[in-house]
Length: 161
Image 1: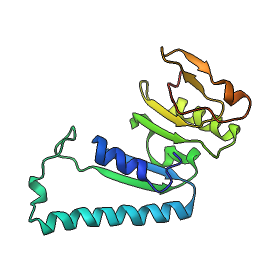
Image 2: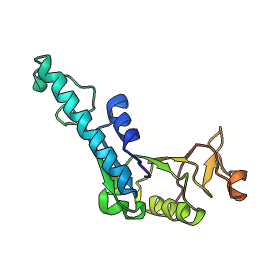
Image 3: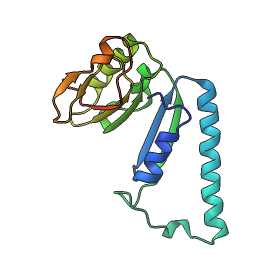
Image 4: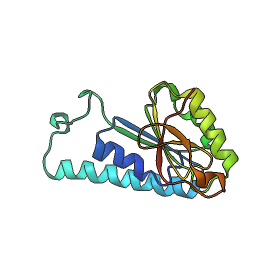
């Protein structure tokens, strides 16, 4: 959420072996730029395989299901419409960039995730105003800076129902 040009999604698939990454971004220019970058990346990978006479069908992957192809998607949408882009119940990790969002929008996105995500799903929120964070022992606490209107630091958030 707040995917920008899709770089975090591409990194999660390419570097951390995620099967699928779905980015949601409101800015049309970022999505356009990101889609061009992802297309160029895909073309570069295909060209690498062709130029090295690699049979793509025999390429070994480290993904959990060897029969599936990893995918990276980037959608232009309001983040509150995310359930229309992907079924939140199937999502197990969310990266939310709340840097530029007012507290009210950040809290409405938190509510949407709390309702839609399955138990055990993890949310990593960057500068999400008003969210409750986990301290080092996993105990929920309110970040003092979010009360004053400033952005809290990056923290893992467990959404409690």
